Structure formats: C-alpha cells, structure tokens
Length: 328
Image (cartoon, rainbow, N blue to C red; front, top):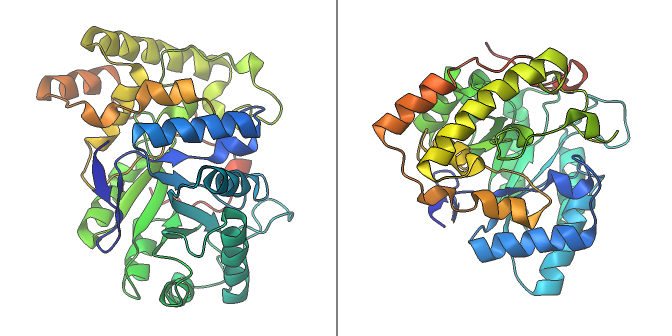
C-alpha cells in the first residue's frame, strides 16, 4: 500500500483509508465478528488509517475499533469526528469548547487511546465563527489530545478563514465519479493550503462495484433507502452508466471498485479516499487500487463514459443535507 501525507505537518498514512460508518449498521445489519474480520483484512492489506465518528451508532463504531486494537495488540492511525449532539433532533450541533473537549475525551475513552491522529468537526455550529472553533481545536492539539484537526463538509471559503488561525490538516467531503462538487474549489483550496482532502463514499455508496445493488432489499436502517439516487427512474438511469463503466474496467482487468478508487487517487497527491465496507471480501476488491496507474487514454475513456453530472438525483435527501455547507 502506497503512502500519502495527512496534511503538511501530519504523519504518512496509507493512500487508501477505511471508513467505519458501516460498523454501526448504517448500510445494514452487522456484528462485531464481521467488523473485526474487516479490520483484520484492512491491516493485512496495509491500510493503517481509519475514519470513524462518535455519531456512528452513538460511539459503537469507535468502541468496535477500540476493542479490536486491544484484542489484537495493534494500533491504527485514527480520525474521528464530533460536534453533532447525540440524541438531539437531526441537525443539532454544538461546536463550543466545553462540548468539543468532552466529545474528544469520550471518543478517546471508547477508542482506548491517549490521542487520535486527526479530529474533525463533523458539522458546523452556525452560531460560532469558524475562527473561534479553530482556536478550540488548536488548543486541543497543543494539549496533546489530538495530533491534528480538520472539518467535514465545509466550503472552500470556510477553509480559508480557518486556515488564517491555524493549519487545517484535512477536509472531508463526499467525492467520487458520481459526486464532483469538490472540483469546484475545494480540491484546489486544499492543495494550495497544504491540507489533505479526504473523499468519503468514493465508491458511490456501493454503486461503483461489480455487484448490482437492489434498493428494494435495503433495510429500514440503510442510509441509502431515502437517497434520491437510489430510487425509481434515478436508479435505473444511474445503473445504465455504471454498467458501461463496469465493462471498461473488466476490459482493463480491474475491478470496478478499484478503478473508481484509482481515479480518485489520480485527482491529486493530497487526496486520501476512505471507502467504507463491513465485509472483508469487499475490501479485498479495492485494496490494491493504489497500484493502478491510469494512462491518458484511460482518463479520456472514463471521462467519456462518466462525464461530470452523469448521476441523476441529489446525493442526499433534504433531511440528510442539514448542516452541510453548499457553495456552488
């Protein structure tokens, strides 16, 4: 597994990380044994960077990671997130210093570590200027609770404001072949400021794979059940494009998931995608993506098959968009 730097002052981490939201059942039922098997497979593949959050199962994902590390006697580099108030109505955030400090300390306890390599503000609290929140995070870094900090789903303008206070190590946003918004400023701003850009859902929540999804089989807790891109005509349209892309990947001898990840890595040396899965066999489908080198002909053909804007439907429902900074 190749390495990339987590911000200008950060450690080197695996070029591909592992998103751990699914350990809390966001994409269907799972259990600790399956999550442990997935973490085992990640470790064997050379993946040493995990992404989680206190929101994921009210700390369940963090607890699973902490239990795995204790049981296996091994330590991942970990990013976690806070700032969304657990148990409150959707969209309730608190970025005040007392709340953030308590959240960090609770995450560290669940993870069984003294510090995490990276801590994100999961969603902005609009009542507090981002400069003030950055000061809070910088104090937590200086106190040794976190190695670095970042923000999830902010706008380039907010990143620039925060960066005037202290270095922002990473920005996390959805980015993939079917979600291209960060190309309109965020990827460029991160490169300019020495900030790592961490794409989540780089496999389009499972649609960019060699397996046809069946939205009718999604459980009630599946995050995709109300996703516009997975419903009705939108889904049929989107699968038509995926099938064309899949044929291209098969012709090159690559899995669809690995090719989609290779494309994401190809967008800049500061990108560190974090695909998520709860199944070790799915992880093995894409773990070798950093070894794929795209040619100019590959890039041109992918652009022809999946041009920007090909996906039909919004990436989130209106309810899921709460707290996200939309800048274009």
